[in-house]
Length: 431
Image 1: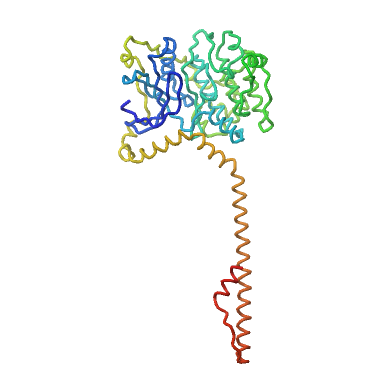
Image 2: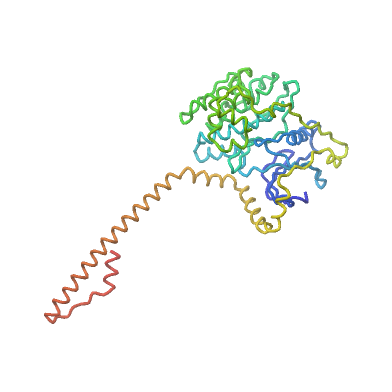
């Protein structure tokens, strides 16, 4: 841990805590998860190592990237260093929108949906089920990107089926609720729930108790989206929330939907995450094309990480560190140190007040029209004021001329005239 400076705590569970940290060597921000591995059962330990194993195996622009893992001997914790999401998670944004009584723009929903579908597609190509897809595990970035994370209960399905019941009830598929074997299509159901939640700010299936929730989910009945959202979005969600897994599309099929491909071509951000051949196929509207020749190859996950008897020996079994542009960042380290102390304090304050900061940004966005109207009003008022001043100036000139005539006439009659001084002029202008 001597290589990192802890900036703020951003999350905490029963056996783990997540911090925002600055790595001193490259001067960059990361998320660092500290897992109390000694307190975990054998299965829980394997889940923690499984997250490292999967993250280190996959390079995807829409999955939180692995940077490093090590054992901190000072407190016997397993530390996992990952990419830092500077806009928090999707659940936080949904909660914020509930509070300020606003909603997502459809374009933002498409942007996030396509990216997490691509991230899920990258997982599924390795035959990996996420198994805990929910809005809290979708991470957002200021550049508009969205990525999947929290893979500690993800499972590699060599036979194509899983049996262990896991995940969050509101997002769990009917087959998981029934304790039936499930496959990659179970993640598709969860993806449908997340997409619906972005639209309605609540999950599609809700009840006062588990029994009621079970009945609603196995029936697959949910309220239609509000009129604000298009038929295209309604249709895509409906395909994912089919009760029978066989009726749901794969991630690859979703990305080939006409409705989805149309959106892919509208955003520059998608050019970064899709292969050149996929974009060409999308442009030529070849719906039956494959994503990429390279992506058709069999994906291989690194071997299971063995847990030694002595915890400190675990470092020898962990994947190597994987940092980007490390050498380039070192050159800027000395010049930026003084600025970083201020930035770190700001980050700490931002993390402690993340909802307030987001509220301010969202309110600014929501009230944009009102501001424009206010500015127009000010401009109109300014114009009116200018006209008023001009009118007053003309009246003032006229008054001065009249006074001058009076003085001239009265001088002829040898009468004392009270001078027209600047105090009277000031009073006139004020009026």
